[in-house]
Image 1 (tube, rainbow, N blue to C red):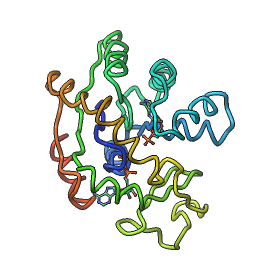
Image 2 (cartoon, rainbow, N blue to C red):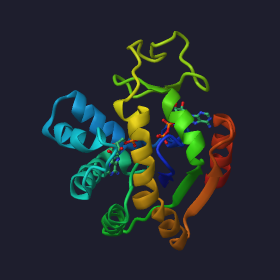
Image 3 (tube, rainbow, N blue to C red):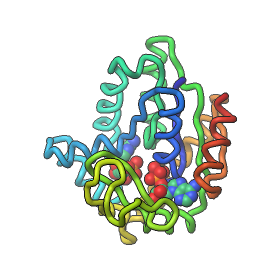
Length: 213
Ligand code: ADP
Ligand code: AMP
């Protein structure tokens, strides 16, 4: 099963993608997580991506597409994957479609997690992340058992620089301009499903599984 998660930053794509991946035993691939891992490791790709991430801008398509397609070649992707945060532009979607078509494959589902901007501001303001294992929390809706510490690996949780209020507005503008058109793109391909992302996490998950089954 090859699944794409669509929706604004902070909609809950990652939260749901991790659960879907666990449910179906397929990898969860987040381009944001790959960039952050590179940044943490001090790689040239991480340094390049940081210039854009810090400003709430998208990393250029050529860099992002090359990185993602390389990841999809790994053996664990043979039985499917959940993409979270990719594609974010029409050219990225076209590159993905071409690459999959070259081996007779296609995207099966594009799940649009629909959440209005005012809810996003609250979600991103309260998001806390573990840069060590990639777990995500919310100070009100999904708090860790011990304040400020990751439940999974015990590392200190951080607020991502790009979740600070000064960057969130820019990221939402970029979403509306460059990423929102993908909803129509996948609607035309007849693979789009919408879910109400303002509902509690478990209800959103149940709705997604119902759509995928
Ligand atoms: P995205 O991957 O789309 O950027 P996340 O999955 O990281 O979004 O979710 C953003 C924040 O909102 C996180 O702090 C997460 O714990 C919280 N969150 C996700 N889904 C819900 C939900 N349905 N209700 C309330 N909070 C949520
Ligand atoms: P995310 O973790 O999905 O919120 O992504 C964090 C940041 O990484 C984004 O604001 C972008 O700067 C960058 N990024 C992640 N995925 C992409 C993508 N598909 N295209 C371009 N930039 C991306």
